[in-house]
Amino acid sequence: MDPLPPELLLQVFDYLDGPAPSDTRLHDLPTIDLLTSGPGYSQRPLKAISRVSRLWRSLVLPCLFRHVVWMPEVYSLTAFTLNPRPLLRFLADNNLAHYVATLALVIEFYDPAARNLMISPKICPDDLEWLWDRIFSVIDPVRFTILARPTTLAALTSSVIDLNDAWVFDTPYHILSFARVPHRERTESDGPSGSASADARPAVQTVSSTLPAVAFSSSRSRTPLFTIRPWTSILLNEGSSAKVYRVYEFYTHTPPSILSALLGTEEYADPGPLIPKTVVDFNYIAVFPLATHFSNLVDYLPRIDRLFVQLSPRPGNKILEDRQEMRRINPDDLWLERDDSYTHLMRQLTQRDNPQTNWNLLQVFESGDAVDQETWGMLVAYLGKVIQHNNWRVERQGVFSRISQNGESIT
Image 1: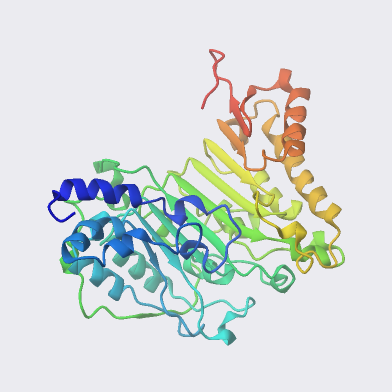
Image 2 (image 1 turned 120 degrees about the horizontal axis):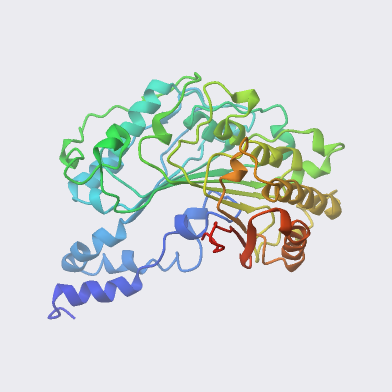
């Protein structure tokens, strides 16, 4: 193959590339290896190609680092250190920074004693601002994903969460993912938070070889992460809440979650919701969440155009067949809470126009549970009962679309 022109080799290599796990697996139950495993991941054809020859490596390197997973070594909760220097230096030395399309930050504590779900890492907001500014001054991804424990996620977003019942839920990992429209042109109105063009961004060669690691301490402050780019979509995956159903009066417990901080509910109203105004698409994934917790999203829906909700396991997830996982759990409780959550949502979705609620501004609602025919039938039946009083129609299975004034569906 050596005599082939580089253009043909690149075309061949392109066929061996595939979507990043951060684009295809964000709706699965969060695990520490969710973004570094999966179908075809063990083969890693692009990595194998990069080892064939120097020519092949030079050609495939931009594709190989199009989707980057950063897993820093973290040990202590009290001296929580994140050092992006090795990653940024590598990207700068190989002129790869402008090829990075997605970046995933996966945080796990190497010291088992630091994995206590009831203890939050100590992070200083000023150091967090330094961290985000340093990373996004070098790379300009269209998706940024964080996979970490709920306490770590709260610390990284300067959020406050309730840990009183964390031991009951025992949800080891949550996912928070930001996305924006790719190849967006920068305008003056974007300001410093806009998506910087290649010319506007600092040159990657300016990354200092003496960048310090960051030691953090705790404090409440708004994080620039939500506005450092004009994000248009946010995804929150809170994993499974099944274990809480083992305890008496499970419905009285509160999960460790940043959802309230994202929405700016009454308890966390100061300094207001973290979701910026640029976001028009919100995705919430949780496996059998408590209806009382889900009601936060229903009652404090942000000003968005599209809402995606998934409250049941995806096809292929065997959680309901896992005897250990379902030990001392009445399956009826799981489905009743799920149905109550959807009933509350549909009641808001189908109410008559109310200028006091953001539900009046929603254009598209999509359910990730539509593969369950019983669930989908329940939602359609509910919509059918009130169809004469609202402006919604079934666009396709799983999707409700608001009807415009000319009678067409808004998709």
